[in-house]
Image 1 (cartoon, rainbow, N blue to C red):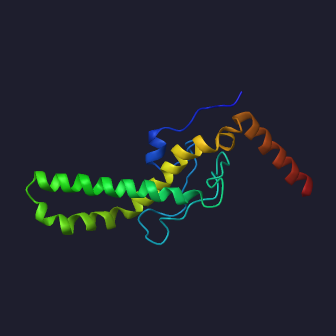
Image 2 (cartoon, rainbow, N blue to C red):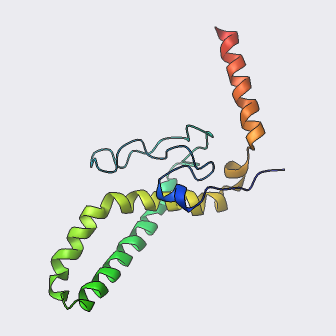
Image 3 (cartoon, helix red, strand yellow):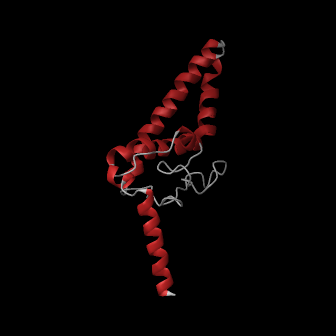
Length: 147
């Protein structure tokens, strides 16, 4: 029977694989504006393909939009509560620009954690731990044969 176990919230916050919770999703640093968007092709631990079909991450635009609108609403309410709403026109765009890498990454992670298991169940849950180990052993044997 297939394993339906998934990674938890801590793995999501640390940008880890949605299936095993151990492998990295992004290759670049979040603090580097050139490489914060670099996504690996697959999990280095469980070999889950991070892009099950071309254009999969176009849906992340909707998640990103929701995160940014939520930021604007929370920022507006917070500034209004502290009677500083006049500064909202400067503070909120600056906060969004600074938080852009975080919003980008987490919108992609939401696609991986929410949409991927629902739409691509066979790809996400298709291999159990024992199948992965058997495939790894087979690939190691094939490499030894070639050498």
